[in-house]
Length: 278
Length: 252
Image (cartoon, rainbow over all chains, first blue to last red; front, top):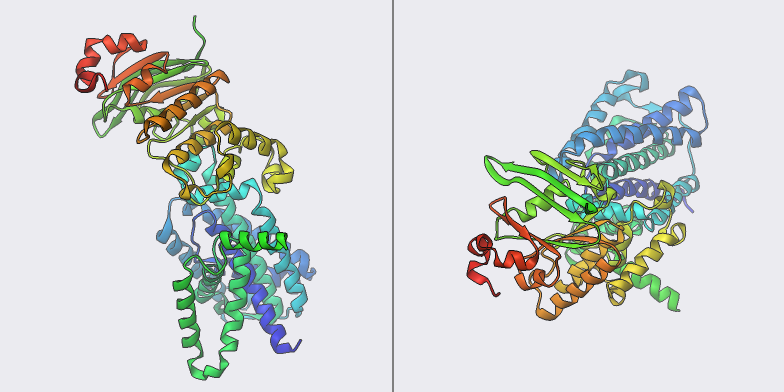
């Protein structure tokens, strides 16, 4: 595999984790536009641990995920009072807060960025991405996941069939934040240089876009969306300067044809059934 | 002394100066079907919402099995044994019938059972769901999404979801509203069979004939006040009730 394609695959793997972090929160009906903030938290904590403290990357990622998960839970509490577009704006505000903090946080380089991390291979990234994708797909068969979907479908009814909707929503926020942090840690150790600008609004939007494009009702949708989002612009290189415009047009067409995203539960069920039959 | 399952003691609910419920007291004995009737806006659904914790009572007490459950969080009340259905059906549109029956069993099992794939981590929950599926004759629509089901079946799914939780008391809010004769009879038979399993039912209903043949005891609400109670025949012949509610359609 050429370095060029390896780089694209690494980006896709990191985007997949970001998309999954949004997907989990979205499964409870909450839209987060701030996951790049959690990604930034993860990137800086992981880098601090590997470069300044000197511990190996894998435990550093796990520590960063736990800390980010806790921050996610804390952010999740005020977010409980907000729904829909208001929640989206609040999470966006949180991510901007993280970015501004990092800009002024001189211990980790501030606006000058931070480097010194050891490069990780695309294989290592995909062990995490694939592993977490698998984990989420297993989780999708559990009752917790049904409880999350129940909150998504009708929160009042969910409460009245005995679900603790507060715990479910906050738990999803915490879990999503932890995964975003892993995406950040891997990003930092793949690009070996980070700066606060890496974790801006556009990245949060990328995560959401991958989920919406790939399909927001099944975890493999995030995989399809991430791959498309990274590779499609590359395939449109022949359009030269019009590349991003062509990409945008394609996105619009896909979403017009399949509003629910490329993959959805019904399509996935058909695919697995036909596989079982053959 | 009767064996009371549910007791309401002088429950009041005020919405901006309007008494939606004024000192309503009523009881449901174990294993019986009790009805609440009354004209539109009498406070019947408000009463259900107070019992299940969806609204907070302004005064009074709700006791289940001699335990105060007044103004608990809805999920705690459900877990203590009160399940309900809604007047305007509230299913989870994107979820299949089977998933409805699993998700309602959150009380069974540890966090690990809930986190692992249900099919192999919690066979007891699947068995229970299967049992209820069979009881409510829903096996044929097991894997259909709730939003794609006809109205009558959606009602059955909602009742099934409530029953899966193994409640002591089932609250049904107009379970046969908008149904034809045959569908309503079907629901009536289900309720009788549920009573045989020892479940107590508190029922809100408009259709007089329906409650007459079904309930052992009736309460009549009007403008948030209990105006009468008694056996169906007593209530039917009570002049106050005839005046307030039955007057226009006594033989409906």
